[in-house]
Image (cartoon, rainbow, N blue to C red; front, side):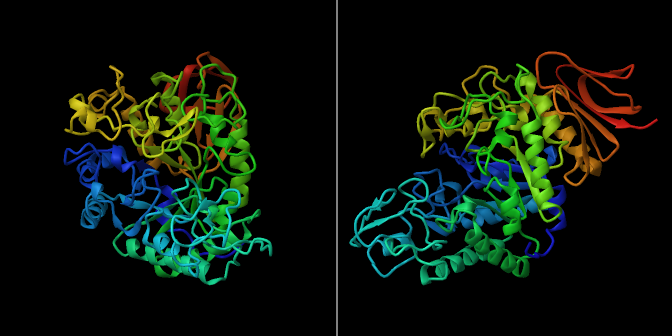
Length: 528
């Protein structure tokens, strides 16, 4: 394993919070969230206890894929404000002890990027992957004077930046080696982009489609070399910055140079089974190729935590102390916790698990109040990926209060980026702040408990006592955690002495037995 500089110490205790900027808070009444809106609500994040915010792409873009089609890496999209507004957000967040991470789209640009416009008219430009003639499968016809076709990385409007091919083929002359001029120019460009924003106070990046750089790279050896080179540069130039991977396979991404990787709904040999086995209940964002499964956090009680535990154990053993694994509640690409048949009373147990398991928790904006995945929305900026896969349902406006548009914006309803959840009982931050029994207060208390109890953090040990219903594990040899996400009562024998209950609902330890009511959870300190 390549030796990297140890991760910044702040990462070990980080609690991530992901903000989809166009949906968080609109300060100027145009219906789209912006940097000033985020700045106005930093006190909410500070009170909640999160310390690291990841923003989805906020760069200049035609928004055919919600900003993941970048047209200018060094300037922000005017709909969010100016570069100075972003700098102001970073400064104000820093005063509250909150770091800001940006989303780096490393593998492709927009067709509107000046690099691509130049390349489409210059046969000698190899910043992108071009055929010299014809249109092989998967390629898109040239929009310029250049003959042939280009390779997209996701949508057709997102041409793949050329980082070379791991395997060359004389019959396919567009397969340039990784050390060709175009790939080398792109590696240098990544450093330039990262250096620019890190110099303005950003604390790092979440890297989109991080595994997609070098093509025909089945074991990711050459892609790993790209990230290893970048990590060594980062260690020397910006030692306090971090790289988070959208890779979904920590065993590969962290040795490649990332400080952390997420369990995702895709990635690795099991195609994201670890995360899906926890949360995915067959509603919301569903890929047609996924095998049906009963997730553990489902009222039916037919799931199991075992697929997740096994994947976490394997990844943790491979990574050891060289990096971290992050567990999200959701993100902009897959369903919120409150989705389909899952109801609000099932969410406390989910957060009790997420905030006590030895991973870095990542809370998707609005999940702390139990915002709902909203079905049936129209396609918005490329949100629809399949007949049952509409990402817009996880991207609706943040629900702040009971004023118009749930306090997200003063714009007319028909000008909002996406509709607000129409449910009459939709949760809001204001209502839950006023109710000590609300989910928001539980998440606040759990984060606080995690911070003052190192054994419950990412570095404490975990011993699984029962991988079923209830899910029972001990953290750091001192704290017992009981999670029962099904609707039925569940029991498990347990003989050790308990000193005190730290947090919980519906869990009792009597006469050597743990009894957990439906949707119950509990965190207990052990000892005589």
